[in-house]
Length: 229
Image 1 (cartoon, one colour):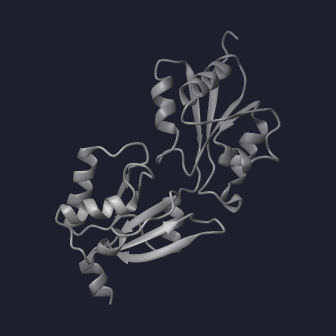
Image 2: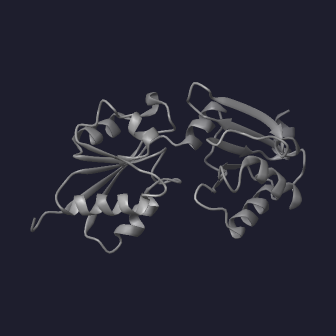
Image 3: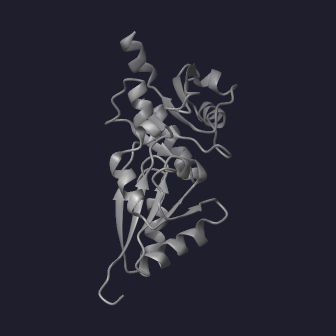
């Protein structure tokens, strides 16, 4: 293996629907000898996987990533499947941390994120919104930054945490921290899937409701909404 560069591909699988899986993603998976990803992601590539596949879970994440790196260093082509886009609440950060001291070349195949799909469904320009992700954790610092952005009248798009910082919890937190109870919110549930649902509410209303674990939350500026109306 002397002189051979170890390569590892991180493939964005899109927001969930097979219609949003890119051709580049499928080609990368087809060429891979080892494909690693969550069951939901693997199911999108059943006809494309031609080698070994390994289901990725929260419990085996460290072992699976080590196996991916070791396999790449052994000369095998490896594709890691990352929901949405690898660079936004995806696997890219975890892989970079684990390969910082390894001689591994990382190739990222971008995918359509749930944030992009939600913005498209709402016909929303999102180049100037404040983006937040609580997918991995909901630190106090990030929560306060969210509250500050909302109170400053910024449009916010965020990915909640389905266990510790749900849309209901987010709404309650913002209300307790001085946000206007009439602030408009939109929840895009299961975006691009057959059971997709888009819910329009206020912070006060959202604080009393539960939403699907897979969702994107949009918090709109009250002043901007009034101007549009």
